[in-house]
Image (cartoon, rainbow, N blue to C red; front, side, top):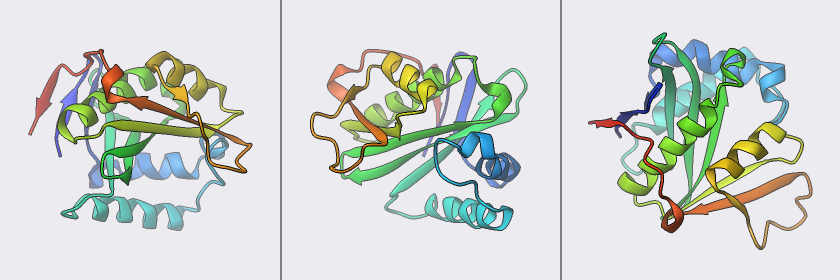
Length: 178
């Protein structure tokens, strides 16, 4: 798995040094309000260790990256791909509160989409989020996602959107590092 940069961000595989950011994200009531109930510190630590372990598997089903500000060199969030099939994955992102309102989701997720299309043989990326999450709705629309024509049945609380590799024309990644 590679690291890569954008105009303002370094996106690299998560590492032990990202534990505090991970715990802060998953235990924060406000950040978790559109995802699920916040985790306890112990549960968040177990989830972090599980994420690190998943990154070591030969056949990855989930890949998680740290989002690092190139200006401050601090980890400001995480994002992940969870494989649904061999060539489709669900994407997700979480940012620390002080990183909101700076167009970081568009830049970070856009770069991860580009990486997935160019290096991971992903053909379709899915985004699932609560209908009440207006910020996510705005930035996935900016990236070009569209509602699935046949969303999962009985799910009235969430939007299910997708993006196909054939529609990708952006070039957000500046450099890829092995």
